[in-house]
Amino acid sequence: MQLTDFDFLLPDELIAQVPATQRDGSRLLCLKRQSATIAARQFVDIPEYFERGDVLVINDTKVIPARLLGQKLTGGKVEIFLVRKVAGVASTDADEWLCLTKSSKPLRVGTVVQFTAEFSAEVLDEMDAPYRLVRFHCPGDFMQMVDKVGHLPLPPYIKRDDSREDRSRYQTVFANQEGAVAAPTAGLHFTTEILQQLTAAGVEIVNLTLHVGLGTFLPVRVDDICQHKMHSELYSISAATAAAVNLAHQEGRRVFALGTTSARALETAATADGLLRSGAGESEIFIYPGYKFKIVDALITNFHLPKSTLLMLVSAFAGREFILTAYRQAIEKRFRFFSYGDCMLIL
Image 1 (cartoon, rainbow, N blue to C red):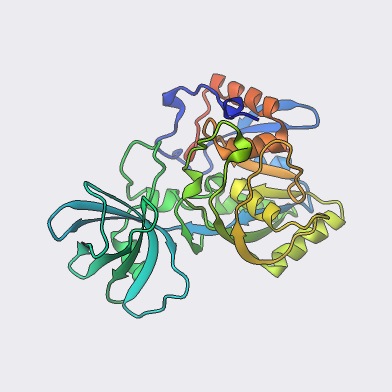
Image 2 (cartoon, rainbow, N blue to C red):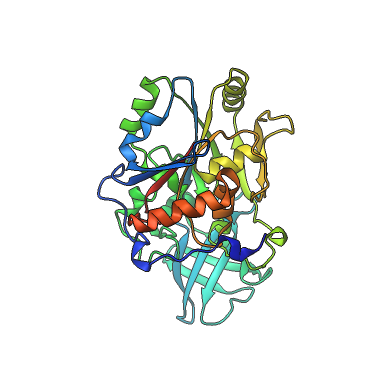
């Protein structure tokens, strides 16, 4: 398939720049694959689509304030974006991370960047552009310092600086495993009250962790999408979650993936015969039309960018033409798109 097969025109004013006034105040577009029907609802209606015994798999990753703004000793401004902590580096006063850097001139080995009087970084290795290996120095806990001085990495299509409100609204209510540089945005709509409604109705809610990486922002740069390579993302699935999902399928009950991140983790850890394996690893799975889902029976997701791997994933799940038809209807009905936008349920 060609990249242009996943293109559509989206008016700029439909790209949500701020979250809905209420966390669960967004709209919901429900797609039923078997009947090929599309219905516009409100997100608070979503419990109606669940049945007793369904399993909802959520991603409990937590976004870190990964954008660090500082300056070189010469005074030049520098932005350092945390990508991934380097495994095996244990020190009381230093942390090493793979980072993206932005400055007037490329940062060379030995460059020191100062964020505060007590918080600094040193470039250890230039790596492959634009990545750098960076060692950070600060007293006390590194992540506490990052939480204090860092900025949330809002997606590039949100044309404003991050705000105090984003500290809560660009996190799910169940986020507790630090490590993501982007939110699992389908989960942003869920409130504690809606989760309680689902539990009371007999829905089993289980969690996994997939730390959303920079790949979620990177464009596909090849015309033949089969040639695209995904960036890896760390994931972890507990034995309890695997057991719950496997028992549900054994008993003919549905598994809902909350977000494409949950879907990717589940399908990465699936065996050829459709069992879910527990454990931790890296997901590099690229799901596009032709892929046969082994675990996911229903998908809750936001609306995705044109030509993106996430649009390809939902097209694999529901059919490209059906998805593009739904997107056209969403545009006509003035749905809000992308991270802070409205929601879609695919049954």
